Image (cartoon, rainbow, N blue to C red; front, side):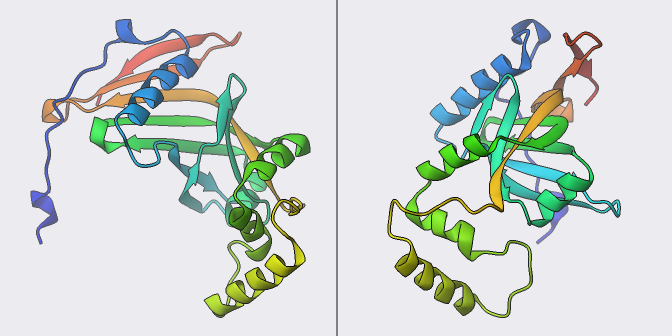
Amino acid sequence: MNLADFRRDYTQTGLDQADLAPDPLAQFGRWFEQATKAGLAEPNAMTLATVGADGRPSARVVLLKSLDERGLVFYTNFESRKAREIAANARVALLFAWIELERQVSIEGLAEKVSDAESAEYFAKRPYGNQLGAWVSAQSTVITSRSKLEKKLAELKRQYPEGKVPRPPHWGGFRVAPSVWEFWQGRPSRLHDRLRYRRENGGAWAIERLAP
């Protein structure tokens, strides 16, 4: 296998500033709807990048579960590595990679916890197994075997019947309030289209084209 031979030219479409919505949330909504209609697997999957107090970055894929003018929301264990890093440094980055559409959306912003009421409302809608899983896993900690997880899951099934699982106090949502959005459309010869929305003083969005 020669990785240097993996090469694809992007030819589907372009992206002009005149075609953008004036608000990045509206533009994201357009692209997300197109990704959904295209049948992409989990179009709400996004890479979350964080930096800990020691300056070391880390990244993982999480799922977007809601968004509005306040920001983009995902849920996690508050004792996980990502949550501990957000506690140390609230500046994060998100990336949606819709390769089939030759598109990316990257976002920079500040993350903060959503309200307990919002977390509880979402938790109540989760599948039964997912609710139990939030109790089972001490996320990001070292474990000796998978069998311990499965044993704890069986115990919790006996303790909490379906519809009666309380939300763990260590589990809930984060909302990322964007200060920068970038919409990336692949183009031939690696001359991709990159349009960035950037918050100006006063809260208005400035749109600028970036060199590929």
